[in-house]
Image 1 (tube, rainbow, N blue to C red):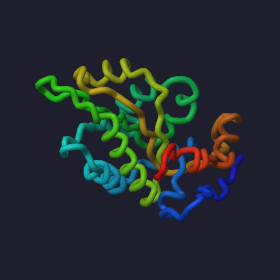
Image 2: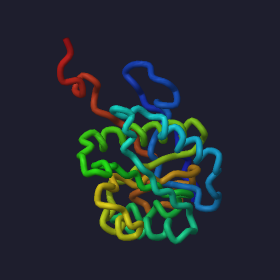
Image 3: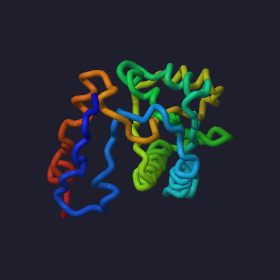
Image 4: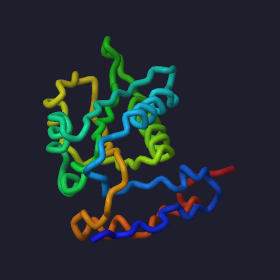
Length: 195
């Protein structure tokens, strides 16, 4: 059964760029098409050029294409219902914060800068017709063992990336999430102080 995905544009309180208003995080990925390598490269390039404190660039990515042993291993490290859908994504990307330099100096802004890099990746991917879903539900130690990461590199999120699939292929509870209205806390509850 095919489930139509209706207009997913955010109902913003103020105007924003279309690419931002239309970005959302689906769970239904096309399980057949391989990743468009040029679009993947553009998304990673957008991440590369995101801002970072002192141009430190404390982020790294592990990129695993569907069908590879690496993709299988990352998928196995996902928790709970993430495993029910994320394996269909053409690519699983582990987003990693470099929390200390090679000499052991802490990089206190690593998670913040990594977040910006992933945001840039997400917006570029969406602009190019791909969809992205970020997941915090995974076992970081499994990723570390699978990839041999040094302790100073911390897996922070796993990003599913690919083409939009049919929501009808998802388990019933996830089908409902796929078409549920998008909501956010009002802006006046988000801005704590403004003078």
